[in-house]
Length: 638
Ligand SMILES: [Zn+2]
Ligand SMILES: [Zn+2]
Image (cartoon, rainbow, N blue to C red; front, side, top):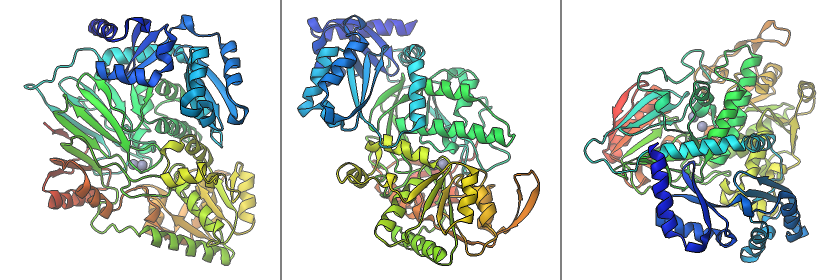
């Protein structure tokens, strides 16, 4: 009820601040934004300037939408758009959202739809009175992205209601910074002194925000975060924020929806798209293997409808006393460092999620400059004192010599990879080396979800590294489309590959705990000419980890259900130089550079010894209070 009064107050103050003939017909909450409906076309045409000016006045994020009564009928509007866009723009889709009064125009050359200084776009807006949103047609179509758009299109009425409720909850009381009764607690549910099932709660007097909600993909026990603690009350949860799309950070999220959570999930658009893909795949694999399913597809769909995508650097109110900003983490596409500004900035914390503090071919390095910072929560995957990661140059040299040696002796190379991250980094690297003749030209087979994940990468060019973006858009060379790579779809083609010529195979899962990579391993393991190359972190409990520890006789189940011991005779190598995580050196470099200097640093996402070792190393460098909490601890931050 109270939020109604706040909305009314906001309405009055907006009406006072806008020009009398701006034609405002309605003002509504729309998630963390305020939507202003207007029947005056002028306000839509100079959209950017108007929004900027108003947002400054009311200190809220807002969108301006045309009143449904003035919008030109869809068929007519479609024709107007087609007529106004030059043929060369290559418009591929025109998609209307009646609830929001928006139209998505997908074109091969979006610049031509926008026109010089936005002239064409202004002309379109003026004639249709829908708000156009122009995006580039990706060179590869992602079934997942189309699927998600479809869910959103069909659920548009529901979505509007959801966003209204979210807005009402954020504005449940008018914010007044609380000087006296101000506290912040952090409750750890998973991913502390371990890798997997990352999740923790930030609790203030006013609100509860959950950061990450992952599963442990390696384990047979302790798979899910400890959400059964009394401190976790699903009814009181204001928001969930997901750092990035690896399952150890979001695999348990749809479970919250199964048990009644109906609040928002904040993350980048790329994270939303990839996490949906990986959750659905997780369900498929678990079902095939007869494992327990903590949730089903319906819950994933609910999650999609409740997800509010944010861009890097966008400051957003997510609770009366909490503001959220996501920053690039450099780990995988869409990965974020989460910054929370609490109680009018009296307390600020940043959670790195998984991050890479150096440039990769795929992404720019992690952000390290924050307006304010009291507590930093930092990952420790490679935080151990003996964790050395080869330099990029050494890593590439090792990759090239290993592959060339194997191909020369007539062997095949198997590289297990997670669908997202290292796979794309390797695709770009292999493509470049083959093109330049450094690597022997040979077919590279891509198996599992990698191709779908790669297609999602081409949907988000804005998040890729500057060089890669430049290569794709200005030099017209897209390594993801190279003919060196061949997608594998059936198990028959897998057998053909094994019986065929020397080759390189990139396959999921990345830790050999199921999926096509395990199928290939069974067929390749006993030939010493073959080569198994690990390029990513292997979680405790996975087959990959066991092989790294020296296990060579592995009982494996055959297609006929019988078990057979496979003796691994193929050459095995570990090359962590392509890792999406920061090395110990990079972690400490981040600590030296991060601004402002935090008062307290908390380590997480690493084996016990690494979390402890990193915490003590950080203490020596910046003399901040450091902690390496266990799961299920309550820390008072303030
Ligand atoms: Zn990750
Ligand atoms: Zn992780």
